Image (cartoon, rainbow, N blue to C red; front, side, top):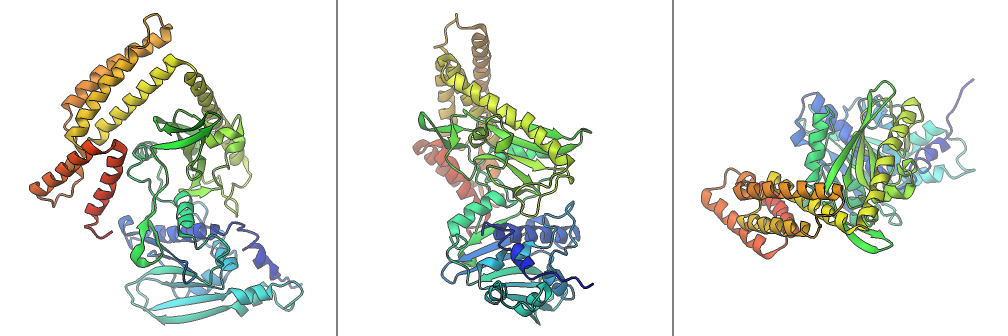
Length: 510
């Protein structure tokens, strides 16, 4: 008996599989990353040469995603791109492995094309899907003679053209994109990619360095890739994860501002004590729900690509609402924890059960306890003072590590330390023993910090300015930083410095 696969399977694998239009960006970036990894493994290129470019042209209603990875050899293109659900990728090595992700854009444009070439080949292959014709063939009750294979053959066109043998790339292009969706809204797309893609933290989020250091310390590799986005090739800018050092929160008391005071790290092991996942979350004042949806919630990442969304872990908290008070990430390590086809959760197996137990015992419990403790501190004036001083101490410790922008900033920090010491004087000698002990320890730390600040010669300009700058040029930059430090708040100076440094390192080509 001959078995046929019905044409409506294709509809289930497109619209039915990816209910959010933005998912197609994730799928195409995911495939690009796998291609780059393969090129790296084969020694074709170095990680610093990776590049993924996303063009969102709302005027022409076109989208393109290009990577400079390995590409696909011409004799494999048809089978690789036209076979459905028949991928040779492995979930233990690749982020995409089911062979359906490339179909993600079919439902949202009039024409979907893939253009690729591999190094050493003088030809490129262009495969085009006629999405309007596809929709017509999938109208119920019509074109009943077609099955899945014949529909694919009817809506695709394959062309082979000349190309330089030295090039290698893969380009996805969507033409006639549906403007009802948000796929052509550049800022919306940028926000989506910043949360989903395997990209780096922004330099100004200095806690990102601690996250990366802890991952390395625990032998965990979390790869990052440069993704650029713009309306054209001339307007491309790099996308970073949206995490920030401070953010607004909303509670019954109104809107307030929380800062990252430190990070807590946690491990989730299986029953044999093998690592399933490793994560971090920010220790803050936990004043309320984060206003910025781009960073709220502890997020799960596999291959550094988001699984689900900001609410995925909410069920594992003592109170689900507390997930919205938290900021953090969980990096999946175990190959036994497998993303489902929609990538909104994981396949249900023993490892998944152990993972959920671990989540409840770590973030689910710890964050809830810290939120309740923070609430008590806010209602206790002495504990509130202690917390403020601890926060001030953490900031100065971070500055001593990262370096001062200028001597003016160094003087400001010294004056602020003296003011912080005076804050502790309001705590009386007859305060509870625990509070007095905290006060004494902080007094001692403030004394040593003052000495460290006074002796520090750690200025960021000295180590960050490109080595090809002359002494006089470096002095000009240092003088600029002195002026900025005297006239603007530290957060503003830090932001300006980061942008200025990026401009310097790019040679003014950004």
